[in-house]
Length: 67
Image (cartoon, rainbow, N blue to C red; front, side, top):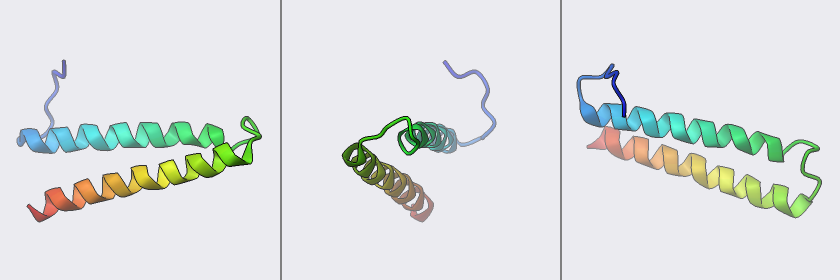
């Protein structure tokens, strides 16, 4: 459970958590783009997955700003 509430609006806190989650997941993709993963197909699919993750984050943040 989250005890600290730095934002007055609860929706803003949820957006902040979502952003932190997507940044954390995005950082894990960096391991796939090193020599740790030698399969080019896996790198290609991971690249597209990261693009969709970033686009999802962007769409959600822009839609919240518009509302």
